[in-house]
Image (cartoon, rainbow over all chains, first blue to last red):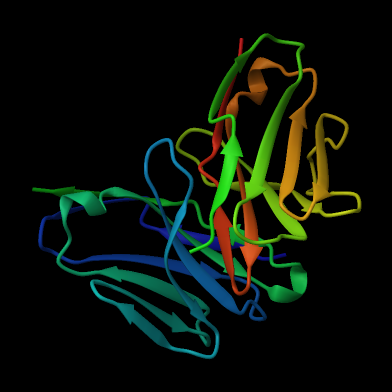
Length: 113
Length: 113
């Protein structure tokens, strides 16, 4: 089955700096890669996603890149703000497996003001 | 975006009792819903896939007789934790796919005393 590894486990950045979180996946057939932000005591919120037919996607301060050959994808947050502080999870999905998401272990992002 | 609700948001129960958690898709129909469990500072672990009108599919290691799932309508799935024990205390989250995305509920915090 699919296995997703996520690094780093914690990340501290100064307000205004960029943050990068990386994930690798094992099943080359996976075709959908979402990123979720989870605040304490709440459910995950989708912040950006990318499909296997695209190499990069951007939405304001957030971008995701995908390297299918190397089987890794990354989340980039620019101009970080204190409200970006949360736990971020990457995930991989293979539609043929019933749309199941396999999550990475998560990254605690702290933006220091 | 689509909305998924959960009820209750938090519940405290005595050891040995059963607890039912509801997951509803508010503005779309979902023939499939997913149930996750999340322990503190850990990632989301898929427990089972709830299928409308048929039996749920459980992940390896999840006891189907302990975690009863019913998906009686296109907008409602329920998870019943039977004979709850303190080690069942966790954050339970459901999700439902809508078109190409998967939307998560706000989660239910279960504490078993």
